[in-house]
Amino acid sequence: MTLKGAQRLRDELDHLKSEKRPKVIAAIAEAREHGDLKENAEYHAAREEQSFIEGRIKLLEGELSHAEVIDITKLNAGSKVVFGATVTLADVETDEEKRYQIVGDLEADIKRGLIAISSPVARAMIGKNEGDSIVIDAPAGQREYEIVNVEYLD
Image 1 (tube, helix red, strand yellow):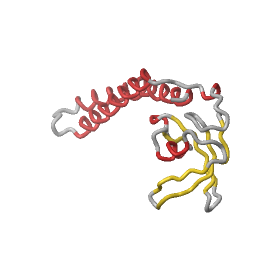
Image 2 (cartoon, rainbow, N blue to C red):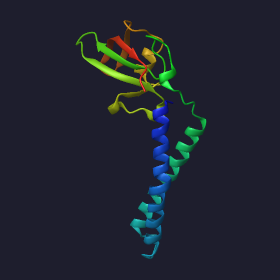
Image 3 (cartoon, rainbow, N blue to C red):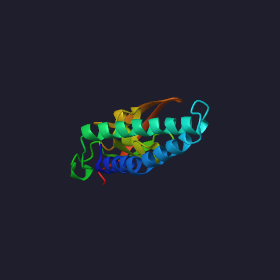
Image 4 (tube, helix red, strand yellow):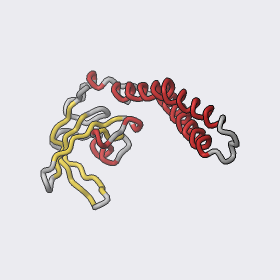
């Protein structure tokens, strides 16, 4: 994963441990005071949220402990597309340009232009160079794109 992605995940982990976990523990304690737990919706909702938080904490801790963090600014792949590259694609038919950075699976966020290395778009781009064309299988059929620019930004 990228340095930025690893830091975002560490920040999320810290937020879950220092803020969310104590809040849900307090909510469970408060719900217990309301009496019969079998019919206590607040208690069951708090326990469900606690389960989600603990699961996410476990996932983040596991991923961060096994992650290989790559400093993109130290990559020198030139115009070749590798992990961490920020790539500008141009649709061959419409000339519409899209810009994506190839990142690890956990840090992917399409709204921010971060696509997972395991995504079909990233897999089509890996190993290609500026000026190359790629074909991506989209739900609406195959789309052809040209790799306009490859950068390695922080």
